[in-house]
Image (cartoon, rainbow, N blue to C red):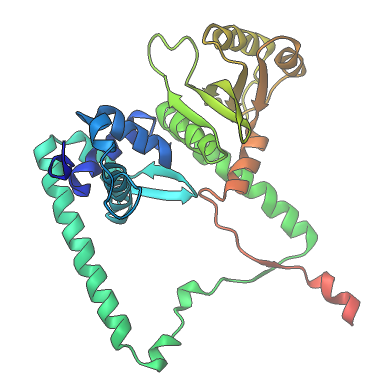
Length: 306
């Protein structure tokens, strides 16, 4: 094996996209590289070839560039640090035959680099006046609200979020939840479909920098205003998770849990962390995923200076 056998970074864009699609539409940065290395012929030998002036695998470096290129051409997006989400363009490339998809990737990459060069040239030739130009769309709107309005707005955004999530198809909601959990550090593989034994995702959850726990995930796209999830659902999920060797489990729903369900979640192993609609909304807000935060002026706060 020599450097001539190492694929170009553009050759690794499509494998990266296939890896994200296979993992459920989202993946952590390292998971993408692990997938590419795992499916590429003779990758074990290729990974050992390093740059002559630095201890860095050329293959790994190009795989990382392939992942970055997928983002730059719009096939991946990165709403959270270290976590990538496949876009409609990325899915369309995955669905195409390899020759067609590769030709489109090459075209998109060339177009991106052409536009990047033009932008760089305009920046170098810009005047001092243009450097201080402010786009009005970048200026955040300031809303003035009293405590009652703010509380009502808080309720409204949660309702709007849960209704939008409920409108997703079941598979889409599963992919969203797995993406959200990945943004909090979990490493998950989607296992939905026939024979999944009630498990939608399986993987590991970090406990400390050196410890992790095997975790199973189940997603229930129930109506937020419908019947709450009862003890039977939790108990059945616990048995399925135990069958998969999970030490922890996470059950996510848009609705609510009954008190017997909450007791069942901690009465036997594996312990189930229950995420209802309200908690899910909090996690989405914390991850700043799909939510635009607008500054609100608390006019009463300034009373102390009157």
